[in-house]
Length: 107
Ligand SMILES: [Zn+2]
Image 1 (cartoon, protein in one colour):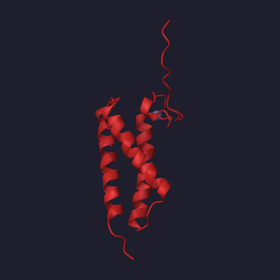
Image 2 (cartoon, protein in one colour):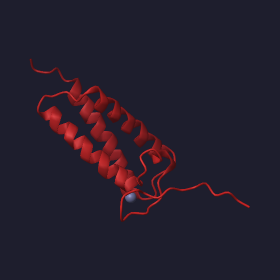
Image 3 (cartoon, helix red, strand yellow):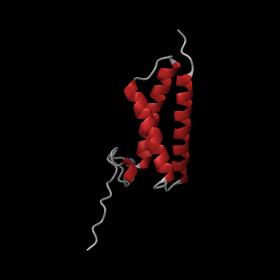
Image 4 (spheres, protein in one colour):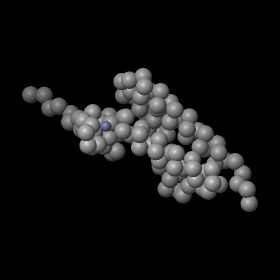
């Protein structure tokens, strides 16, 4: 008898797409993970535009998402080129965000 590794399904209501192993702790499929991350990142970008620094929790969250995106891109591999493009976009977004936070803040 083969014990199947339990593949969890996305916790978003109408979605039952499988959750990639890398996203087990998030409990969502790649598409919904990306939706959520982009929503939160645009909130952080808005903060930066107002010359406010995100708090340390947000900063560590951001770096976690960078790690996740890299793992997702290199490891299990997105099935769809669309997801792959969004992951690359995510990394680019994070890089831009770090760049804008490095700029000297006006007093
Ligand atoms: Zn989903």
